[in-house]
Image 1 (cartoon, rainbow, N blue to C red):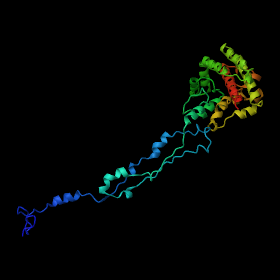
Image 2 (image 1 turned 180 degrees about the vertical axis):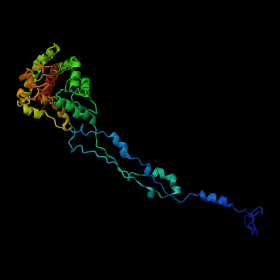
Image 3 (image 1 turned 30 degrees about the vertical axis):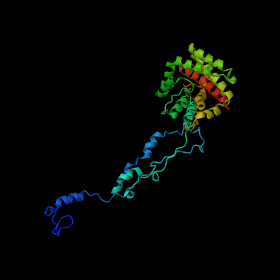
Image 4 (image 1 turned 180 degrees about the horizontal axis):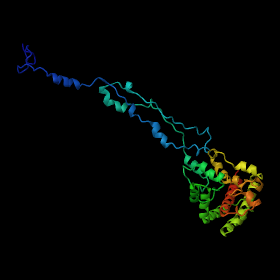
Length: 339
């Protein structure tokens, strides 16, 4: 009997021919092309390490903002080494093959990756600018400036570097290998150094310094006219007068007050005044012939005033003395203007 499609009971096709048997290789190839109903994906390698991305863009602002915000208003920003642990989401990604086309637009990892919220730093640039203005204006704005080295030159060697000289001379002085080389640089640029001292003295107008300011200008006149010994002696006397009247009459107390143990502990607001007064320490070192030791070769108030010796009156000590009286007068004016 022929069925409704025209075939008979023997299974012949419409043309009366038997279907050929399926080739085994063809069946195997088709079987290999069938996708499994479930697949796994590990997307952990696609998630970026936000710690490595963000950290280079967060500068160390600890020193700059130390005086800008109280600790309760500016909490410590501490980004851990890994903002989130390595994620293995393979177990979560057991999905039907048919759902692949719908996966990308609906994948939401917001509950897995924590939200990063940084404090509001609006106006921080203005704060940083104001704080940088408290640095000595003649210091290089170099992020690699080593304060410990600067204070070693100022405090240990007694070389004034605040307010005077100009920034390019300061750079050369700091880069010099030792004190003798620094003094040679200053003497080689003495005309520029004297002009810098005149310019700085012109900014001083406090009434408490009105009787010392004209003498400080005469110090520069004497040096420029070739009278280094007179410039040194007058500069030392004026410096001592100003210090004893505004800081303390006791030399030991003054040395203790101006000494800086760790420059990194100084607040930005006190750095300039402290650095300007730091050379007073070696300046106030005492010496007597009865000590049995050689007299200090660096500028000494005691030797200059009480133990006058031709070997101590040098052009190098004279230029240091001119810079010191200028720097101290300007620092004392700033101190007197404080609230």
